[in-house]
Image 1: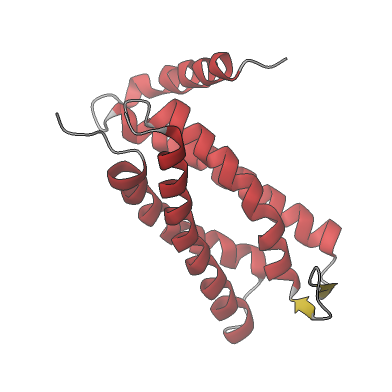
Image 2 (image 1 turned 30 degrees about the vertical axis):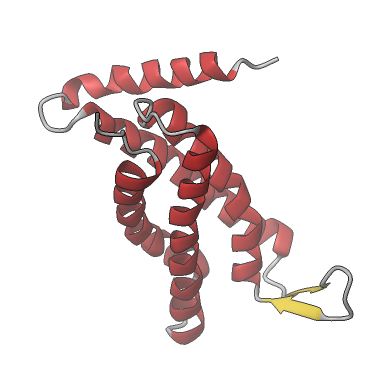
Length: 170
């Protein structure tokens, strides 16, 4: 069985090894955030590309809402977002909690709820950004997702540092 604390320690040691040449130009926490967030972002992009191109297949996705007679139709880029989002939500939370913002003394459940709040804001930015870029401007979905991600990274860093994983002042 995989020990999550040992995995977090290993990831932290690997990130810190690469931090050495950056010591004088950025704080350790910023570097860890960039490494964890960057890794999660790459996971997001790869999953998005694979699911969009090989699972969804560029087709509209139709499904019936549970316990109703209502049907819903999602465009392929939005359906892909709905599949990828929960995966990267939890990998991102785990990395930020156990690798980046380890000094936070907030209870884990509170951290998760706050993290979800920030991620929900980013999800809205992703949703409306994809709608605008793909459906209004006619851009390709994957590059559109990459551009929108740059915007959400900034929102996420400050939200996680000062809200989700903040350290209580003593």
